Image 1: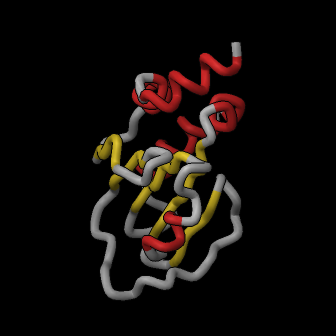
Image 2: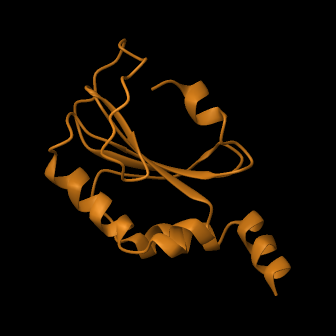
Amino acid sequence: MQAKDLEKHQWTKRIIVISSPDFSNKMAEDQLQHLQGDLNALQDRKLIVYHVTNQGFTKDFSSEIFPSKNIDSEITQFTTTLIGLDGSEKLRTSTSLPALRFFEVIDQMPMRKNELKRQK
C-alpha cells in the first residue's frame, strides 16, 4: 500500500490503518474486532479501515486481500494509526484500543464538530 492509496480519501474519509506483520496477528485481530463492533459509528464518522500486512491489505473488514504495492518496507510490529480528513496523523498506538477511544479523538476535531452542528 502506498501513500497515494490513502490520499484518494483526503477530505472525504477518515482512515484507520492497522499495520501488522501478518493477518493472523492477535493484536490486529483484537483491534479489528473492537472497531467492527460499531459499524454505524464508523460510518457516521466517515471512517474507512485498512489492515495492512507484509502479504497485502484488506479494506473495511473484507476478506479480500489486495496485493501490496509497497515492497520496500517490511512491517515488523503492530500499530494502529488514525488519519484525519486533512490527511494528517491524529493518533498512533501500539496497543489495541476500544473503538470509543478513536471516536473520542474524532469527536474533538473541528471538522467533526462542524459536521455535528450541520446535522442538528
